[in-house]
Structures are given as C-alpha cells and as structure tokens.
Image 1: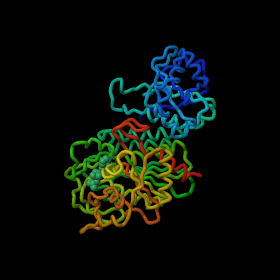
Image 2: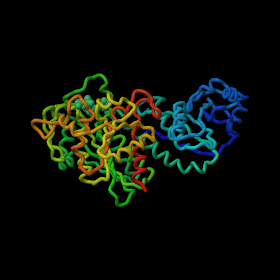
Image 3: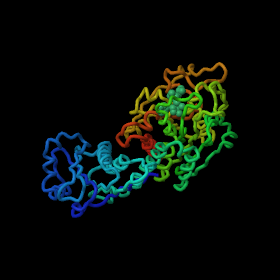
Length: 490
Ligand code: BES
Ligand code: MN
Ligand code: ZN
C-alpha cells in the first residue's frame, strides 16, 4: 500500500529554521503581521518575507492560497510557502491550507509554522491526503518516491499529538480506498481484492470470504450470474468490527465490480479503461472498515462487499435471462451492463438476513445517469429515512464531501415492470439513477433505515479535487467515518 506519512507536532525551534530542508510554510493573515517563527524566517531572508507580506501580490491572495518564495537566500529550504489565512482557522479553512501545502509538497519534507492556530488536525489530514500519489505501477525512480516528513511546529504540541492516531486512521483508510480504486483490473482481480481485505484482520477486524459454492448455497443467483462470464471467481467478503457491545450494527454494502466490460451488452471501447474503478463502492467500504478499526471505534460496523468481474464469454449471462435472487424474486435481465444492482440486491438481502442491522448504507458506481445529473461534484443520495439521511448529509457537509439527495417514489416502479418475471432490472433512460435506486429498495425490508449512495461521478475523477490528485478520490470514507462517530458511538 502507498505509504502514509505520520505528521509530527513539535515545539517551535527557532534555531532549527535556517537548516530545515524541503519546504517551510508560514501562515499569515490580512495585514501580514508576523509571529516569532515568521520574524526569524524574515530575518534570515534579509527582509524578503516582510516585503512579500507588504506587497499587492499578498493582498490579492484568497484565504487558503499561497505564494512560494523559491530557493530563499539565508535558508537551507527549497521554498517558503506563504499561505494567506483569515482571522480564525475553521475546519474548512484549515483543510484548504493543508490542501494547498499538500499539492506543493509532493512527497518531500514540509515544516508548517502553525503557532496557536485551531483545527490543525484537519490541516494535517488535508495536507497528507492531497500529497497522495499512486506509484505502484511505475518503474525506475518514480517507483520509490521519497517519503518526506510532515512537521507542524506549534505552541502546544502536547495538545495535538494525541490526535495524530485519529488523523492516521482516516488517512490510512482513504489511502487504502484510493489504492484499490486506482489499481488496474489485471492486478486487482476479485481474488486479489479479497486477499487485500483479508489483511485487515491484523487490525482486529473479523474477515470472512464467501466463495462461489457458499454463495450458491445461499441462493445469490443474481450476483453469481454477473460473474459467470469471468475467469475470476465471484465472492462476498464480510468484515466485522465489534466495538459497540450488544447493539445492532450499521451495515455498509459495496459494489465491487473489479472490471465492467458491460458483459454481452458490451460497452463501447472509448473510455472502457475507466471501468477499473467500478469496484469503488467496495473500495470505500473497505477503507471505512480500516479507519474504524484503526481508531478502535466504539461502534458495531459490518462491511460487506460483492466482488465480481463483468465479462462476456461463453458462460456469460445474456439479455433476456431470468434469474432468481436470494430474496426469491425473479428478475429479467435486460442489459447485462446494469450489473451493479444485480450484485447489490443479493448482498443487501444477505446483510439484513444475517446481521439485522440498525441501518444500511450501500455505495456503488452504479449509473452513468447519476453522473449526467450531478456531475463530479456530488454523489447521489437516496434514502427511505429522513433522519438517517439528514445525519449522513450533515456528516458529508462537515467533511466537504459533495452529496445531494435525490427522490424515490412508487411512481417510478412502473418502469421496472416485466411481462415474464416479477420485475426487470432496468427502467430505460428517464431517471436512470432513480430507477436503479428504486430497484435496490425492493431488497430493503420495510423497517430498515437505508441510504444508497451512487458514487459513479465522484469515486474517480479526471481533474484534481480539493483533497486528491486526479484519479481515485476516496470520496465517502471521511463522511461515513464521521457518521459512525456521530451517530453510532456514545
Ligand atoms: N459501472 C457502470 C456505471 C458507471 C458509469 C460508473 C460511468 C462510472 C462511470 C454501470 O454498471 C453501468 O454500466 N450502468 C449502465 C446502466 C444502464 C445499462 C441501465 C449505465 O449507466 O449506462
Ligand atoms: Mn455496467
Ligand atoms: Zn458497473
């Protein structure tokens, strides 16, 4: 897995400044008044910092933006990053500063002079997340990037140091998700994914891998039908974290299509390579389970991921096939490219039968229609329970992970009517993200609070986002971790 740098909070050491390597960062407010560290840096730079803070260039900066003074005379550092800040470092503002510094850092050393600012844990997390890069398949020098140190020199290191474990738990979870989502499908097969999830038993999670024979015995014919055209065996991985005593768990369910060719309803060639990310839901579930275990959450959480590969071959399912789900409903397969819901329906049903969860959140890169509706800024949120949904939206907002509630309603059900089976699995082009959710809801028992997150637009993106370089974002790990902290732990 990609190494995650552990941030270090230490006391300000003025005499060390001249010799610090890598980048050093100064936070300065409107008007440019300097704290002790800045005054020392300014003196070493023979007044260049003060000149910059007096300049129009500094005045014009937005909060969270920085100008880098390169190869400064008087310092060993390669750059001084001067970040403009407002009066108070709110969590959002702290994240913005961290993201700015993370993007500049790459993987070198960085020392941030943060004095007595607030929300420095959020700053450190953002800095680490934004300096992620996926080098697992580079060769030569790029394969082993330097892993520099992240140091925050502060007035009260003893107040911040206890929070570092929590920062690391989240950073490691998000990084695991990104590594999984970025991995190509010839490497991250269903078997390899299950093996990587199984390694989490070292963190105190109970892991179980249900193989095809076990899934067949359970009657998960819809899930198995999706994987039957692939050489990689289908499986369901169950990850349990029991930190909360006797209470019913929160269940997280993820779509883990390690590659989606579309099957016999094959996708066009252009852009098909992006379908390595079609296990994004399972990636988020796995990352959250890692975070929850690393921070020893006082909650019961169970993660279930359905791992399949959607391939066309002689054994592949066909349009027109009728399959029987674990629940017992029969489904007419119209388009083998609408495979995600066929995987989820069986795993959702199994999760409820086995764990009697207090709530369920499923995550899936489910529909192109959701990308058309919301773009790459927001995931689609569907729910049968207003208060559960509100709690999630609040957690997502606190973490600045875009999430937008979409409607459900029985009127959409007529799009799923089938002449031959109990229903079909696709409802045509209108409201494609909603009819997919509507299909899933048929596998949710009446009294179970449920949220479906369609993350097709946010799991993997072509342009850098606030806290991620282009590629896998890890969207949802932080929001779900917060939801668990705020609603499951006491
Ligand atoms: N994995 C895709 C959805 C997807 C599209 C994810 C773009 C990420 C980016 C899903 O399995 C799929 O192919 N959905 C079809 C459903 C249709 C056949 C009803 C779609 O959205 O076109
Ligand atoms: Mn598909
Ligand atoms: Zn898919």
